[in-house]
Image (cartoon, rainbow, N blue to C red; front, side, top):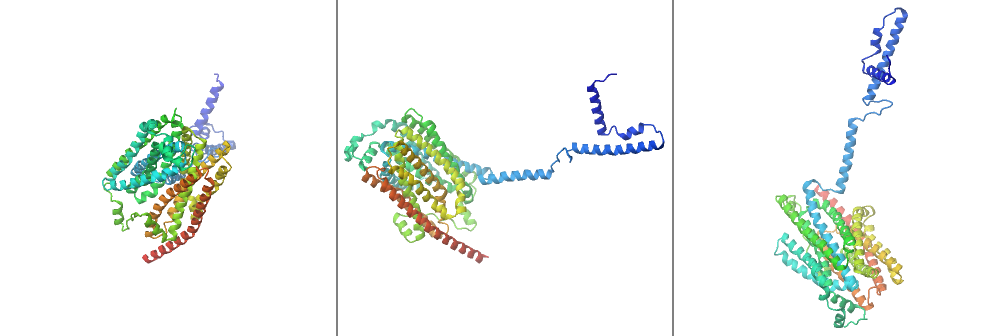
Length: 590
């Protein structure tokens, strides 16, 4: 009988498996052997017993190895408790990260946050698109100097009239109707401008020569009268600038935050509001890239305006859509819940005082009575004035490098995207700067950054802008300064300014903030424009006035930094007094 090698190997392997499973053992084999008697038989039995013990030991080791037990060639199996502990730790890390990055809990809160956040997202998108458009129209047609004139003679009167009209409408309409009545006219105008007014601007505008003759400004005469003549000759673009400026002030500061403060509780606001800033920071990135990659690549500026109008109109429709969805959802889900004022009464807390409306004279008198509030007002005024000085000069340089409207628009779109991205990053990481380095460092950071970057910026202008390389350098430095000025304001200046009100008594908090808001918003914006307007009349244009602007700029920064330094000591003292008073009240209650 012949066996092939493969058959022999299979037979041996089969016998090994049978032996391992216990079907064939040395004991059973020993029983089959006949006894021959004597010592040899006893030794054979002893040897077989030893082999049997060895085989049992080998079999137990092999079985343990197959089960995953401890052996030299197989790793030990992890205990189930260890595995569950590892899984719990992993889940805990993800849970903590999720609570830190997105501290919104439950289906109701997530939906509420997304609906309200979407309203702000599209408000910021429309704001970015209209802001870049108004700057492109005015700077390329009338010059950057026209911005200072429009803020004084256009934006300020229009804003005053709008506030008076809004106050009357608020007494007639409900909050929901008031939102629509306020928002819709802006987007109707933007749509009419893009599709009807701008394409027919040539037939609507008077000639520049006729306006110069009317205002007494010759063709070769520079200065303020020439700027005014250009504004009148391009009055539709000036009208768009005024409407876009009012929209930027009304949409976020008035409409959105009024809506959010009405429907978001105090406990939710601590978690919602920082995420609103992050969510809305994405809007300038998308809007800027839409301008860069689609609008600015049109055949001409008129077609580009059509594309812009489509995006602006879409944003307006989305604002109304998400506002309607948010209000309907909140009315259905939270109709049975008590209002904020009722809730505060239930827990025995005092309701939040409303901010009083103060006139310019009342604001000045109240600020004059407190050194602490005067210093806070100097911080707000310092930022408003200094930013206004450098921004107009920087835009004048950008126009000099990019005189074509399409190129200017493309550049401003990239700047808007960079501002949005930097804002998201700085808001996310910048909150720890004040916590780690203190209030003084946070308050001094913004004027320090602006003063350092302004040195090469003004140096390039003083050396002359005839060289394309020097002009490009000045534009790049001015862009970086504008970018860092805005991001440092969001991350450091605004938090430190708001923190300055915390240790004050209730009256100083409420009335002081109202007074500073009035003076800061009006004098900061209008005051800087008025000063530059006078410089344009004197020097002919803003670039020729660069030496005077630099002197005023650094004087404002020095005053701002000095006020921040003095306020730091007062803030520390007021905080210690407030803490001591709080500890005393706690001891009395105990």
